[in-house]
Each structure stands twice: as structure tokens, then as C-alpha cells.
Picture (cartoon, helix red, strand yellow):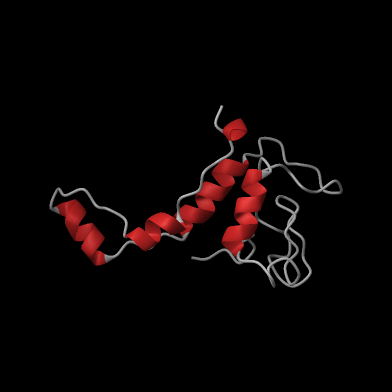
Amino acid sequence: MVNDKLCTVCGFEMEEGPRDYNICPSCGTEFGLHDVNSTVDNLRAVWLAGGAKWYSVAIPQPSKWNPIQQLAKLLFSQVHISPVYNLGTIMGETPVLAESDRRKFSYRLPESLCT
């Protein structure tokens, strides 16, 4: 089941969802503006490089807000496991992501977020 209210950049559950001119209070992406000339991956990389900080000054940051857990949930919800992957797991083999998937789901987090 896909949650259509999740920001496609950072995974925050927005009140109205990522539609034109809605701004994500978590990462600051304005849909219909920022995502027109940039990819979701680029917008995400900029947010992460800036420390994955709460963006909005009007909407308070939720207590216990964790941007890395939020992003991880989004990324893991986008992983599609194929029958071949399941077969390899059942047969005791170590499943490996295809090169395209490794690139899609590999992000270098800023050092400040890793401590």
C-alpha cells in the first residue's frame, strides 16, 4: 500500500501530500517548483548534505523526529523484491542488489548525522 502523503524526497508524512506548490516542512521541497528542474535524488542529496535539518519555521518539528528513520522507511518502502531474490534467500544464498539498485539506495550521510 502506497502512502500518497509521504514526501518523495525525505519521507515525511505531509498533511496534503507532495502535490504542486505544497512545501514539505521537513526538507523544504516545494513540489511543482523545486522538483521541476531537479530530480528527487538530487533534492534528497542536498537535504542530506545540509544535515537533514527540519526546514519549517511555521510548523514545529515533531518531538522524537528522526530524519534518518523517516528516510529509511521511505527508501525501504520503494524496494521491490523479485521472486529470484526470494528463491536465492530460500536456497541459502546471499542475495545481492543489482548495480542499478545499489546506486538508487546508496546515500552517503553527513558525518554529523552518524555520531
